Image (tube, rainbow, N blue to C red; front, side, top):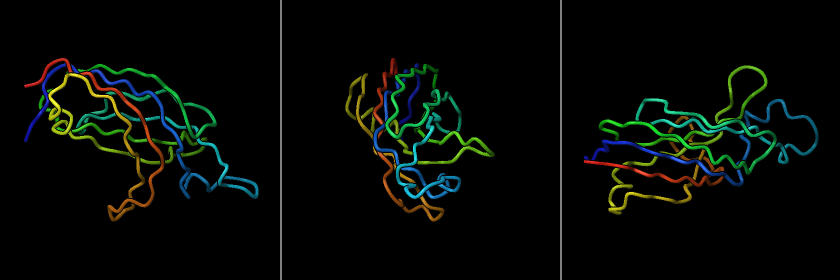
Length: 145
């Protein structure tokens, strides 16, 4: 298995067409819950370590962040981005996530990766229930072994 060692720079740019989950709609009021706007943020992990979190964008299903994160990585295997709705009461609501393997990023032989990734909701059984939207991000790996 290929692992990443070095300085990792990630820029999370935006997401489009995020869809609220049934759980995030539990407090929605009115006849048209499909127009419910999220207060989304993205939590960013490398393997099991939290490396950052974007700011929360208010009342939007297509947020724009342009937040950058820089961290040293040792034996990194995967990057995980999880989208949450900043709930006013209780725990924040999970919206969607995606996982990118470092091995997949390193196969293109470049020190730079930029792409849109699909963020999907996963059920308790591990099946993708629906794709919630797309998020664009940029990865700049400064060094890998």
